[in-house]
Image (tube, helix red, strand yellow):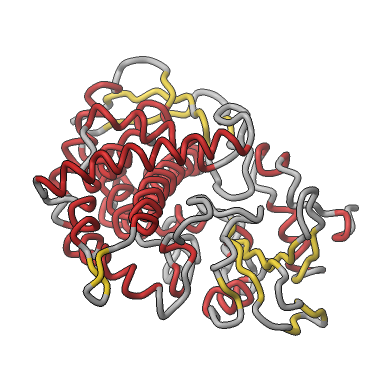
Length: 400
């Protein structure tokens, strides 16, 4: 048996081969505050229980985002101005409020016809087309088109957004040659959105680039660094979460076909099913904080300056918080998962991700489309995002 001191969450193999569930169960039960060495860094604490993850996420005064939110000591936006992701209150609130009106439930709901049109188009292309990669053809395309539309990026530029997202979201060898790949992608993103911004300054439109370009905090326009960082975070978060949710949801239903039948008979339950998909998949595996003072937890001392990593994927499988957490139950209610994070930095696009997933599975049921997984998924090598790189499927018209 592995002792918890042998567990190394920098080893990406368990994440690439499955869910690393056994490892996290071991940590929750025997080492809920786990010290992990780091090959190129000072090491970090891992928080794996639901209550502890919530406590860390809720206490920004003690656990700050300003030193970075990924395990490695780097910020995606580089060393310039911090993104919304890397500022605490009181700075965080005014920055977040700029975009919040565009992603609140009522506003997002207005996108329903647009989202449905994109889904219909994707299904029209793929139903009956034989085996295809669900990720390439559908789950990456839907959020890509929608986040492109929200930001104001023309449709023909969306493939670039996808490539940049892949290169920045992980160092998986299929997408990255190492840290320099992400740096290069980041610079390309900044250049691209600065060009779009110039167009919007001349001719504003109903999109987020126009909103951010015109935004002020206390009468002062957003600095160059703030704008760059905001575009970057919206692009990556807007793509990654929904793509992983859709792919993981299809795989979960494939592995539990009785629930497909239930959803076909009760399409009104799809909203509840999507919440269970979020819990089950946990599209964002982890987020990091940095301790601002010494803290006692589980008989150990987190020192000021230590990195503390919250494992949302583990919290969402915690027996202390969920009945049968290792069972995929789309009728689970209530379902207080932390799949979209928790606290001040909970996912800004959660409403959009929920709606996109709900409408996708609703369309499958309404149009009488069967989706079958016909090969093994290829998973992302990452301890940050739970991604599926390829998922071979067929889509067939059964009735309707």
